[in-house]
Image 1: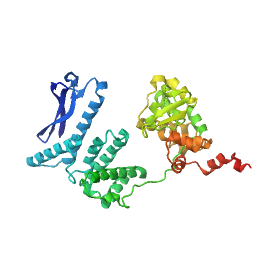
Image 2 (image 1 turned 90 degrees about the horizontal axis):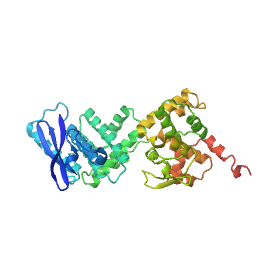
Image 3 (image 1 turned 90 degrees about the vertical axis):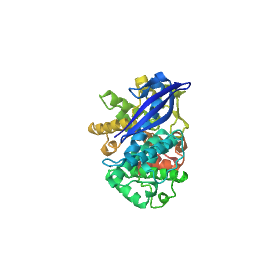
Image 4 (image 1 turned 135 degrees about the vertical axis):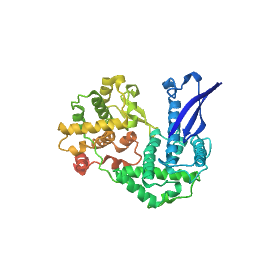
Length: 400
């Protein structure tokens, strides 16, 4: 059993340093977090700095430190293992070493002794100010799968163990978890990124992850979109639950912006000027300018400051239910399968596809969606052959 307890040191000119004790197997490590706060801001009982709104980043870092130490312990001390006292002391030194690397105080010096799963929080810490937080957060799921895989196989996946044999075994394990092909591909892509980082840091010379056989699995998904009539029908669908109705309205609103869920919170009245919505997107850091459809201010004015954006997970859960409810209420125009697949991203795809069908120039749509090539854009919108023919019916070429 392991535990982490934070405490405040003596107050100095720049505040007091937050220290910690990490206790496990009758051994106690005393470590520094490197974080300073005023003495009267530390709440020992809750293990937090207060007020919370002033110290959100400090408390977030404390949670990261806590999780890193406990995860490292779970990695090094398997359940039921009996370890001699001297071996525990050696592992304590190793934990201290890993902790210094995690904090960025020391260059990584341990190479194939560190597992790929344990390397993930080090990687996340290194790039916390350089990468989108969502990008780094996705590595947590890969870490969980690696740890579960290690527990199942009884072996530790070090850098040297990332071979073609591991690739086959690990992808088989992921398939057993009923993950979709593209999800499995995402985990493999992250493992390749971690291995590239390990190569750059000279932690390993193993480069099997770069071989042809170590490929990122991917399948062409039959992504769906809602037509303008279907979006209108969804907008007028009677939903009694206030929270679900609000999420439905948010979804409909963004069927007219083309924004990713990560940018939904930026659709506000203050960002609208002269009939145009200005949004600096989280993914590309570029500002897009979107003509405002009448439904956008209508929904924004309806909710005012109460229009809080749900997490992507909650929004997808509710939108999935709404799709099922739409089928039940028979507003689906004879295509129930499509409605059972709608998610937050369907709003973005619907915007792009409907704009294209209505003759909005490709480059103009791409200025909003952020696609760099027409080839990728055409793959993205996925209109059917019939829809393409209907779009061209009024073209002068076919009416000469």
